[in-house]
Structures are given as structure tokens and as C-alpha cells.
Length: 351
Ligand SMILES: *Cc1c(COP(=O)(O)O)cnc(C)c1O
Image (tube, rainbow, N blue to C red; front, side, top):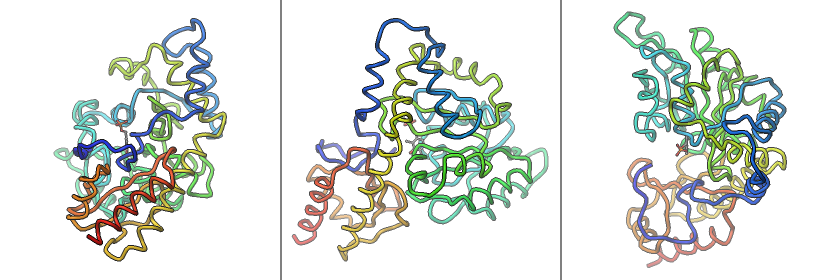
């Protein structure tokens, strides 16, 4: 992420990872803090959380827990590729713009090939162009399509769009990776099941949203095709991503899944974003940039307004074009915070 504005404001829209730990995750974290249990994931919490994922996704998948999303994406992509392979992703993809080359580093050089597409979504025509443009030995062989759900600009792939991309992948012998840092937001915004939105639509591996959903630390990785997970545990260990006190990642995950908090948190964040969008649409100087489908609102605002809001201590990122602000909502965003922001915007514009 680019540099955030400096002043601290108690109410912020910078990212859903600015938020704290949600009560359910914290409750299970404390419950797990009883006595001694086996380390490195050989404990009951980890077993239960993995089983709960299998139940939730209706498939006997392989489940791993790592510390963060960059590690989840990078290690997953590395496991799907040899160093001479390439990964096709959107030009705005987090793996390209915000992981400091970690996918290339973890894979010993697998190259990311950037595809275009409106609204942050891969355009199958451009993906196919990248896959078939070269077949000679001098070009890194395309091996994976990586897509983000919900996308970096807060939009969603429909199951039809997912199926179109994964059909393309199958046809050319590629695998499909889903960066689901905001998977729950996409899930609750659709009327689909976790299974329908992933493996039934041809997704091979999902990196699933812990931190931004309401945990303190920890992402889950689900290999729907178990064969692809071969030796993945070794890769995690070598990369320093095997948490010895694994229960403190897996127990909060169990809490999110078992209580349904992961869906409530995402639904709340999406609703707050919908409310924010509705308020912003009433201000003629502003222009909503992408269809608002999840928990982020992207809005074009005059530079002077951005500066005035920063001066007033509001926090948000402006990395879309030159005057696009990203306003993210989280499990703990309040209508009061939104009203305060909208009030400040109106006041600043009237100055
Ligand atoms: C936040 C985010 C991640 C994970 O980032 P970490 O800071 O490494 O946890 C991955 N993908 C997307 C799209 C994200 O927004």
C-alpha cells in the first residue's frame, strides 16, 4: 500500500486492516489460551478449524494457516509454478502492486504477466492473448491465472465470469488461484455458497480472508485439489510461515466460522459501504469510480478536498489514478463515522 496520510484520526477509512479483532475471534483466542497443547498445528483447535472449513466449503480440501495474505498468495503461487512458469493476473492485482515481489521471490522467479480488464476484473480475451501469444522456449510458460475476489477496486466476479476464466485455464492447462483477502465480502454480496463461488466455479486454491474480516493475524489457504498441496507444509515451514503456537491463528478462525461472524462482519462492512456510497452520490462534486459491490467505495474527488480531509485527520488511500480515493469499511465501521466524514466533505466543499 502507498503511504497513508500521517495524522491519526479515531475514525478512518484507510483499510479494513486498520480495525481491531472482532469479539468472536477474540473470544476463541482467549478460549484457546488454556493450558498446554501440541505445537505446529497438531492441536485440536487447528483440527476443528480445518474441519469447519471443509464443512463450510462442502469439500475435503487441504487447509493451511499462515500469518498474512502476502505469504498466502506467494507461497500458493510458488507451489503451483516452476521458476520458469508465469502467472497471469490483473494489472491492479495485489500480488503485482502490493507484495514487493514476494510471488517472484517465493517461486524463484516465476514471472507475473499483467492482463487488463474493466473494473479490476480479468478480461478473458486479454488473458487468452497472454496465454497464446507465445509458445516458444524464450517466453515464461503461463501456468496460473490469479484473480482477486472481491477485487482491488471493490467489484465482484460473478460465478459465470469465474467459470469463463477457469474454463480458459483448463483448456490451456493452467491452474486458478483466488486471492480472497475479501472473499467473505464477495460471498455475502452474492447469493452463492462458498462452494459455488470457488471450486464449483473451477478455482483450485483459495487464500481466505482472516485479517481484514476481523482477526488479529492469520489467513487460511484452501487447496480444493488436494494433490496440489503436496509438500506445501514444508514450503510454509521454510518460509517462516509455520506458526508454532498455531492454535492462536486457528482458534479465532474457528470462532469466525462457527459463530457465523465472518459472514456478519463482511455483511456489515458491505452495508456500511452501501450507505457511504449512497451519501456520496448526493454530492455533485464527487464521482463514484467503480460499481460498489463489496466493502469499498472508490470516489473521484477534487485534489483540494482530499488535502482538506487529510488536514482534518481523515485517513484513506489515494492510489487509483490521480484523484481517486479509496474508502474502505470494516466489521466495526459505524454510520456515525460515515456521517462525520460526509459532513466534513460537505463543509469543506462549501468553504
Ligand atoms: C490486504 C490484501 C492482501 C493481504 O495483505 P497482507 O498485508 O500481506 O496481509 C492480499 N490481497 C489483497 C487483495 C489485499 O487487499
